[in-house]
Picture 1 (cartoon, rainbow, N blue to C red):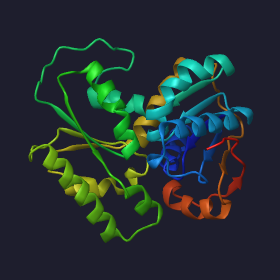
Picture 2 (picture 1 turned 30 degrees about the vertical axis):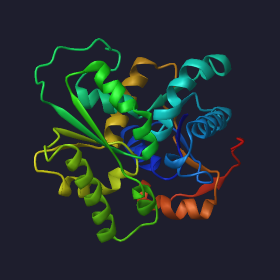
Picture 3 (picture 1 turned 90 degrees about the vertical axis):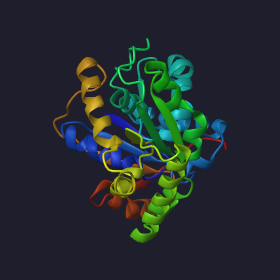
Picture 4 (picture 1 turned 180 degrees about the vertical axis):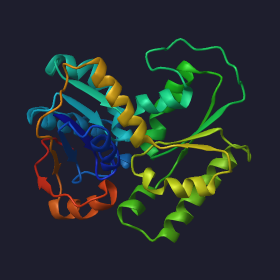
Length: 284
């Protein structure tokens, strides 16, 4: 069984793609709705909450957990992989949504950390994300580690996650996206980025608005299908981690109110689901 974790609903856009691409697998989703949003929390809080969530999923039988949350992956993934996992669950694995996104954006495999020679020194990538993801600088660092010739510009989008989760009117969402795009273009002095990363799992629900507001010809990279294809490749290379099951299932857990989580999940997952309530053992 594969676990997927997010601070709230956004990771359901990733899970939706995973279940479509891997229908023979079982998934267990945990949304930490009691402590969302993570984008406004401190790094220490995010690390502690993410560790507790992964422990919860491991204790329920998951051998691999995907951090379907850009903020958690940006802030906590490296520390958990390098320090916590070997000491506590050496036979388990944690993955994040950053890896496949950076691979596609740069065209360079994650394992290749030696910078490549530039063929197009004028290429640029823009990133829209939460404040915490932007503050972590992880996208900038990982892209420049592999492709230092690429110009990377980040734009935080405060409030956008809340608007999406509140099912705000389309006109209000359009105005918010337009404001964030204008702020980005001002940073770039009107120049057009070659590619845009929507670095939050909520943003696929408004990807069409980003496409509408950005200049024509700008490539918009949305994560769900990228992550799903990357996980398929990972499982082929690591068959010991997880296998197909004769009766695959998808279950949903929340640290918050299950009825509220279930109500909002339909928008993100594409069909009605029922969450079960579980406590998250973390001190914040």
